[in-house]
Length: 289
Image (tube, rainbow, N blue to C red):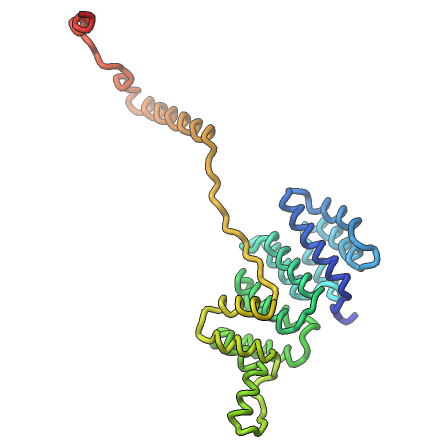
């Protein structure tokens, strides 16, 4: 079966609901098997997602993961979706499952709207960059998406070699209609062969040209403001939990007891430190008078 993952709009709407609800219920500490069982009943029966979730639930009962089942369903889940889940379920990675589900939720929302290959490329690449998922394996997963045609797939191969050498904004600019138009103007109106395929719109190229030499985060943010590209979720920083006052006081008492035990094992407990100031009888008499 060929991996054709251009799904109807209703499938992506249900996917967005699935990833969002799965994330929220995991945060409520509900078991994953129970989440998959209940959410399967909530989805539209006219979509194929309930059937896919049935396979995911069987896989999680056997291996505790859902990424292997997603990889066996390339006609439904994209290679990038599977890649993100594999990274989240990798025990050696710092990429958490909650962040992965939020990424897939926003991607499904964007696919349900007026998705474009350039916008999807920017979103997925920023996800890889912000979460440090690995450019080579990430770009390989992106290239396997049927949203990108043969020109895009060739450019992905070129990008794997050039991304660490040249900055992203410059590479995007040279693959844009803006760069092609400026080349033709410099050639006195004579069309010339482009060095790279035209994959990005004119406005995307102008934004890329304006961000050459700047932080890539500014480039992504400008595209999101100007072209309404989807924003990448940024996981909140983990806050240090404060110790409750009751627990803190108990810890202090335990610490004092441990010090007394150490003193007793060494040279015995010096009880003089617990004595009050010695007063003579004369002092008491003076106080009384």
